[in-house]
Image (cartoon, rainbow, N blue to C red):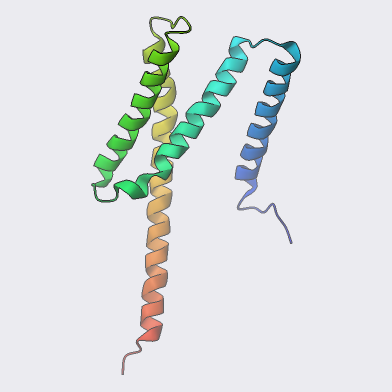
Length: 144
């Protein structure tokens, strides 16, 4: 049995790269006892990725809204979390004057690319499932 196939090789590479990067960065911070800006960015983008995936994964809770409203609600929720987190962090560390704008852009561009891919994939999967359901119905209710 093959665990890595043509269909899953890209996700396996991405997952492996992420795990190795995060573990090595964490070990480096632990061994050296201090964190540099590059390492902060690595952890920050991990957190932003978790936020983006987390927000997108909750789409089923918003199914009563139109798809556009759902996307806007999800995006605004994520941006609110980011901005509130930045405001909270500003009480402990100095935030650059353009930090709020930079953080919003750093999240927004990849988020929208990911959201487009996610919703296209979701729509294709729903169509596939609907075809399977129709096929089952057709086979269970043969015409006389």
